Length: 364
Image (cartoon, rainbow, N blue to C red; front, side, top):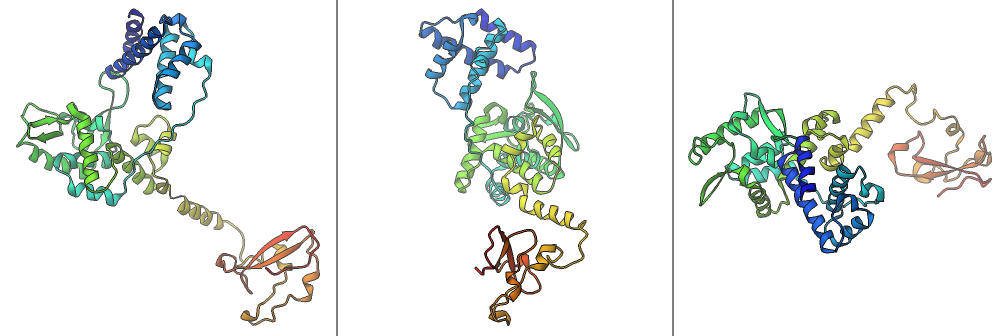
């Protein structure tokens, strides 16, 4: 249809990738086909809220895919008519629960030990440089420099977003060894780095990206590890966080436009080291507190709290007579014996809780 081709030409002029354009062609064609089958107009100016509601009732897909599909149709209508029926409906979307596969360093080492040379190269590039599956498959021999690799990444344009990524020494050594192994299979004219070898010969990985993903997943299943190619990118990101790398630097190395994507999707919660950093913060603040005492008696009200010393501690197990004297400020405290060594006084371990009643001290 002319209206579809006109819109796709517009996307091409805006440097959308061929993959994106073909995806839009499929989505728009499918949706207009459903409307036509249900005897509804497929003219952009006639597509309204009723048409969108029909599509949502017929299409069977995850909510996230549905959201993306409706956004494509909405933008298609907006291009032709200046109005977006999906935006006008103000649909309230739920957030899909996504199960993301993380692996740890021990699992990664086990994968390396069991991998063939091509699988090992994929594992290394994914975990050591955080490259995506498509980026790994697209690497040509000419993209490899002394200490950098030119990466055709996720972005707009025919070749995507091209960046120069730092290449660690470990990766350089791995590539040198891999190229020696590769010579026995690959023709000289084949300039893509990674090849897949089977009984049918050697083919470049970029031609069969799903097949390489399946090989990595099968490798994991043989070892009892749930892994995908993207798990390697998550391992790279989580390791950076565990090493204390600043989040802005991680975002830059991951080539994310939004820091929330980095935090929510790529860093294993344990990688944030929340307990450790909380303690570091407390220690840093405590160094600036002007308090020379070794206990909590620096708080004025605690000086007035009478302490009952139990027979186990050499006392008679009774409060002194002063325990009926109300603490200034109202209320009596409850003195609770605890084994928590974080609240040690010179007599015993205490937790003090104030009560607004006029009841005497209680032992609990």
